[in-house]
Length: 576
Image (cartoon, rainbow, N blue to C red; front, side):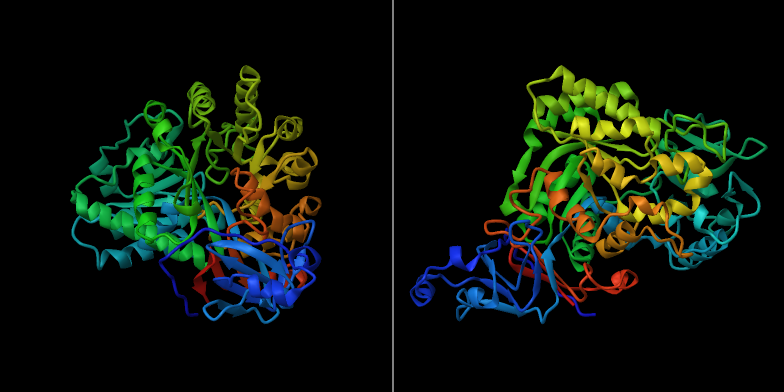
């Protein structure tokens, strides 16, 4: 596959033009007056996601925005001597995918560290670390992400709660500290050297919202759940210069942008970055080094939010390449690590109901700051108790501020709901920011964690939420999952597992519902429905061309579709 990333960016979108309205009765005279477009796609199956004019053949763009959508003949009038023309050759042309919830720096960082997603066992992971030790500098930290104990082909022996002990990892890397992050990002595993450098012992207390797992003798196993992961200090023994830190952070953002546009994503909703991250994003956008649009949630403590929210709020900066108007919190953890906060105990571990990772009063205070400064509040909530507590916080804030309308606050994930809380999403106007791929990825162990009744009633209930009137969006939570929207789209319409079974099929989306969840719904969830999410005149020219028509091909062929072109602001940022 050949890819090319081009630096200059502009802002754009496309609209369907009906010949009777867009062109006069004197086409020759009209054509003579028509300024040529900068960019044109012809001969495509153009699906606009616009109800009024759902399909077309061609699109024209100028100055980064769509100027016409219509037939080949209509759009031909926009072609001048300098117009860049793409022949879509009958392939599917759709609005650019909008990643509704991912971790931008996490994608770039994952490209620099060990990728543990392919490991079939704990032994595989130990072997990967041992191989990295051979080329690591003395004392250098070895970092990785992507392991998931529920996806291994066998349980490690010995284990505690299905998690391994650190002994084999510590033997493979006695002098290099190791920290391996769970696929969910809600647990970590450290070796002895990492714990030694971080001052962690058997007597280290659990932090609020976290847990250090111990063996029968009271020694740490190496597993750190939720906020306990912060006990491992990956800066211990490391003293990079400011220039080295910036160079690494720049590389992380460059790698993230490269991967995102290669997967057909034109806009990325980043689920939590610091003010420093945002400063660098803005700087690199000014330099033309980031090639997709970013909509960023700030993730910082309340005291820093209070000082900086007014200064950092920005909408459509640099022609639509950066928007900062949301705040992120996590009220609980993940189901895989048993950190999701439940109303009733875990079916496979009755002594726990999960973890509340950020105190409810802290999020209540953040809600006040969000209202005061005109920010959306986005709360990570996976368990049914986490979702109920979050909806309670939102409802309390809405009642206290009846003059504030259309706030579009969001629950990030909304994975496991109590039936009583599902209607509240629609009634309160709360957005369910969900990830289709999480359903099929997690489904093999969901019944074990929740029991069949809870799983059926409230696990990944897309249709139930939509029937409540809630807006449901899509994404991948990358790097928790691959950022590939085609894989998540397939999971959303099929809910099919690797063994061929289908996870509660009544909750599947139709193909058009799934496309809307990745385009206009996601744009609306960010107050961006007037600039992106459909192909309509006046919107940003953000377009994807796919090798296969994912709306009509046999369902099991959907994963074989490839991104042929990714166009952002009327400029080709990726070509297959």
